[in-house]
Length: 179
Image (cartoon, rainbow, N blue to C red; front, side):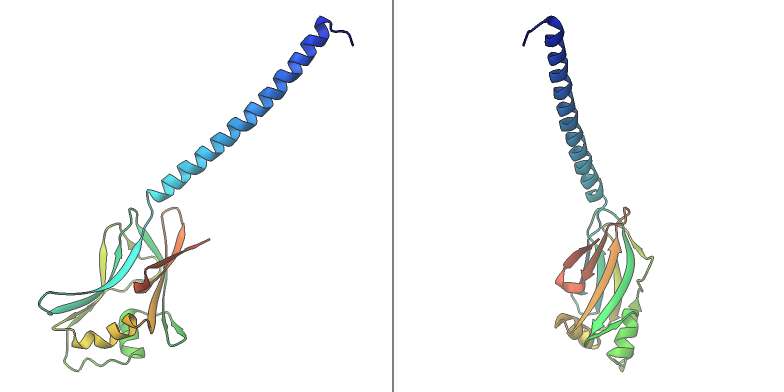
């Protein structure tokens, strides 16, 4: 095999073109990884995180069940379900309290409620009192007992502004991503 200038130029051009293709593929992979990281960062910058709990005042004059968004972005409520004794109820908490638990307000305790449901938006770092009892905790015992013993659970499906969805299961603080 003779090495003349044409052969040397041809082999050199081939090696340079193969190296260019390899560098292009490597650079494309780096750009794709960078875009994925930026997208994750963007999603995390608006991620909601719901929590639920019970809160009583220091003097026992009020007692509330609340829902709070501890995340950095708004939570768009998509679905609210209450599971109780192997049944699923799509109703407000006050309806569950009166119709399913069959609690009667014998002492005429003042109750304030906030219904949440599909298309409710909970801004970041905001709290909604779902059900508030005034004048003591006695009337709240049945509701507290049902949720504290995990006999009943509230499942809330919520989404971020990028429509990433999670399912929250009341006080257990379990957040399951939904694909």
